[in-house]
Length: 342
Image 1 (cartoon, rainbow, N blue to C red):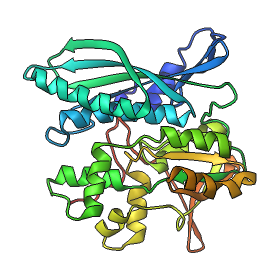
Image 2: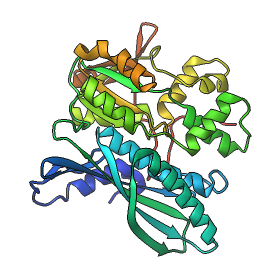
Image 3: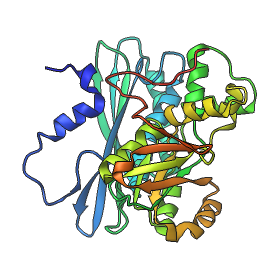
Image 4: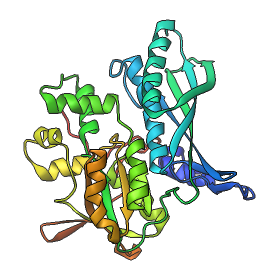
């Protein structure tokens, strides 16, 4: 029998999903997307959960407890944004080892509540568990959306334009700084560290994207563009061709690689932790892209097109095409395919 380290996180998800029993008519979207989607009368409810574990998602000293609280909610807000929904209510579960002071939990909740206030989220409960292992916090978040506005990973179609928000690689670079113990020097480096500590979920911008651009599929970039686009391609039974020159790479990442754009690009598409949005849309909405970006103040860059499934996933640069593997972070295999030593 294969071990968990062999099948990996996504293999385990498929194994669990295969155990599903009879369908529930209220389940619109089950396992396999950023959120589950349930019918609730005239609206849809979305549900998601995510966990931050010390030693797995961050090391001691990397984040303050307030940062941990902020990030624990932000990563869930990013999942809700990827479905095109509005976040509503949160449950917070704490796994507390010995040595944690009451003031530490106060600080953690300061971070949760600061992030919640910006998103209009209300914390309505949770659980507290004493454990012997590392500190962890798990948040379950609900949201709502109209029945004709929910966006899944499975709607991409041949010819659709692939769009990404923001610039990629900065949060992964921030983690490199923290991991190396080097103090970020300069505004770009400081911004990278802050992007890792306190990601900014794009829940408000997602509503503009849904209403003005009518995306056919969407996902948030948590594991890296190279990995997360594969989730859309698998669910949509499609391929993709990306324009390497169009992929927006963070300024600090290019500086880190001393102007080597190729290495910076590879790092950026595999790094993870961006929590930007990756979506596909019909080309007929292309003229509206600049307007949506201007209204949100967020960069939105067309980086490629959806192709037939048999074409696979390729990165086009200088007249040549490179096949893209399923890179990114797998919680069970624990591997990043591309890391720069410091």
